[in-house]
Length: 227
Image 1 (cartoon, rainbow, N blue to C red):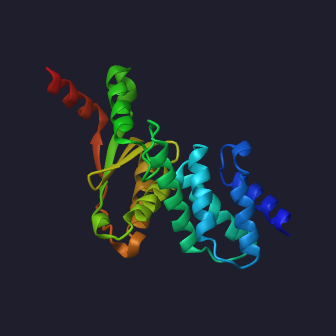
Image 2: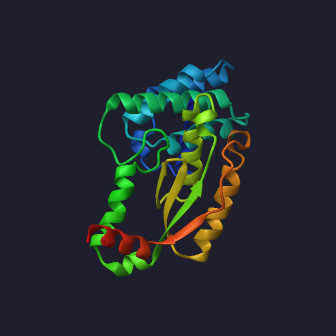
C-alpha cells in the first residue's frame, strides 16, 4: 500500500505541475506515506520534507502544493499542521544554506534585489517590451500581528504563484508587487487573487484593491532620477 500511494502521489504531483521529476523522490516522501497510512502525526516528517525540498532547490509554493497532493490521492482531509511543519522546515533550511538567491526564502516569490534588477534590465533593454508591461500592487496589513507569521507569508507566496507562476512578483513593506502584461485578462486574475488573499489568516491581510502603474512611466521616472 505504501509503494502504491507513493506512485499515485508522484504521478498526480507531476500532472499538477511538479517541474523536476528526478528531484521528487526523497527519503522523507516514504516517511510521510508510512506515517499517513499508520494514521500517525506528520508534523515532524513534514518539517524534514520541507528541509529536503529546500536543499534541492524546490520553491516553497511548489513544496506546499506537492504535500497537499498526498492527502488528495489518499482521500483524506489536508492536515494544516503538516503544511505548517513543511513551511517551517523549508524556511529554516533555506536560511541555513545562506546561498545568494533570486528567491525570497519567506514567500518563495522573487527577492527584492531580483525584482528590482528585472525592472532595471527592462530599463536598459528595448523600451517596446516595457510598454507592454505594468506594475501592479496590492497592499496588505496585519502580517506583523500574526504569531508565526512566516507561515502566513508562505501561504501568501503560494497563492500568488498559483495565479502567476511564470511572472515576477515580490513582497515588501506590506505590499505585493507584480510585473504583469498590461492586459484585461491579467487584471481579472489579479482581482481573483486579491479575493483569495482576503481569506488568508482569517482575513487579517485586508488586501487593497490592485493599483496599476505603467512600466513605461516607472522607467521614465527612474531615468529622470538619474539625470
